[in-house]
Length: 190
Image (cartoon, rainbow, N blue to C red; front, side):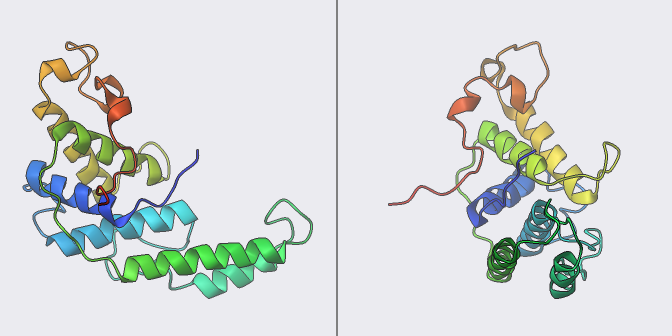
């Protein structure tokens, strides 16, 4: 599976959709938009970059706390990157990528997205879920459930003409015109 760190705009859309479609959902109603955005962004970054250990259900947990130790550990583990000796250039790239991700997370500030479209909200939620790796099919942390609630409720707001099979499942895969929706959403640039 190829995953990527979604941008600030994508997180903003997801958070805006959470308050539009899932404001009463556990995990949404207890948080302000900034805190929810940080949770969703932090989980996306940590799981995409494979940063461990980290407890996404613990808001005080920082996915970057053990970054230096993790990089040192990986550098000393033969075969970590498929070679007998780790490639120092690859380790430097990993460290640079994680440093950039940490900066992006630390500088994140929620900005609401207006207007939002229910079909685009489905795509944004489904994209975030795809990027946010789970630890098995039964692992559904609170953030995953929030995204699923957004997908389900936004899909319910899409009219029957918005689906390939109007009698079929209300999901991203059944959205008519899904190829015109942004998978990694960002604000239009002037």
